[in-house]
Image 1 (tube, one colour):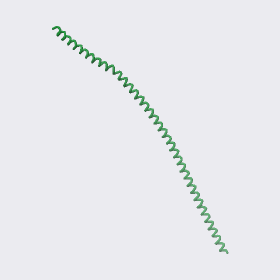
Image 2 (image 1 turned 60 degrees about the vertical axis):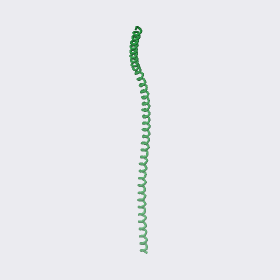
Image 3 (image 1 turned 90 degrees about the horizontal axis):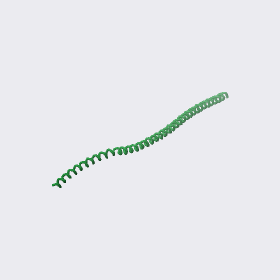
Image 4 (image 1 turned 60 degrees about the horizontal axis):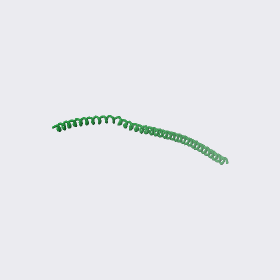
Length: 133
């Protein structure tokens, strides 16, 4: 009976050890799962930070593009205004040159007129000589 009781006690001790090992293993597994969950939470938090940073960067890029577009439109408008000013100046320059061109033409016409007057006088004198004879 003592042997049976000793065997029974040994079985209970073995069972207690197995239960203790199972509890330790379960605790270790739970601890590992907690650590894994914490790691996943940290990774998720980092990912969310990266997403927010990207969104902020994207928003900043949009604002920069809008700023560049506004600057481009402003420069384009200034270029169109400068083109109009250039065209007006070219017209004014032509108007300023016109009197000089007209003066040259007038001088040329005056020379032609003098030349024709001289030729006319020459012909008149020949005609009068011819009529006198």
